[in-house]
Length: 240
Image (tube, rainbow, N blue to C red; front, top):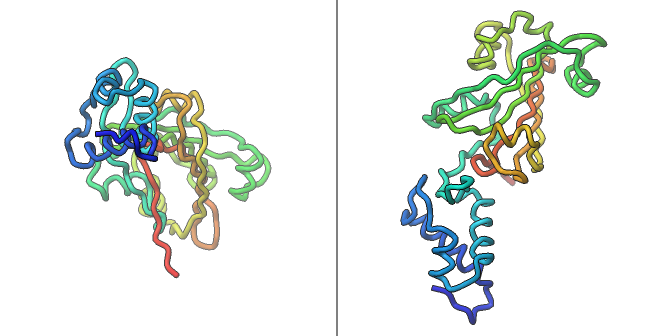
């Protein structure tokens, strides 16, 4: 299977072979691939070479590791278009997946200066801070921290945030959500988030900050989310 005379490095050849096995369905989603030892013997190469190939496929999101158990074929990443303003709950339902949350904390605070500035708050005005894990089909997808001005949603409670916040704002509060600005960057996961997302350290996550606005440019929410890079990807359509 390997051409040791080829200019293509051996680890890349192994990587391409494993990738083809996954894409052709020879390796089934959720099932373990052969162990590093087995692959080392099959290919007649060093264990470090095999490990490099597997690591690349893990980083690409085609495989995932479970400590002490092995390496498994990953479920294809969820694609999130960047051309619409929707909530996580709406996104998952549109894909036929079951969204759910696990609340980590819910409290009122006086925000830090950058949060207050972005939400156009006066000094000492409070915000609700909601930290939760976002799941799709019971698999952790993101850690989300939301900041909402208390003056806009003073009666916000646990029952409300366990559902769809956007639905609550538009249907119950009768407010009109207009647009949002969003920035994204790849960062290394924080230790506290790695445990909640069930990923190893160091792992990359997609860190996204979104500021959402009502009509007349009134900011009503800042969301800072750390998405699992191995389970989520963002796509956009660009026209000339």
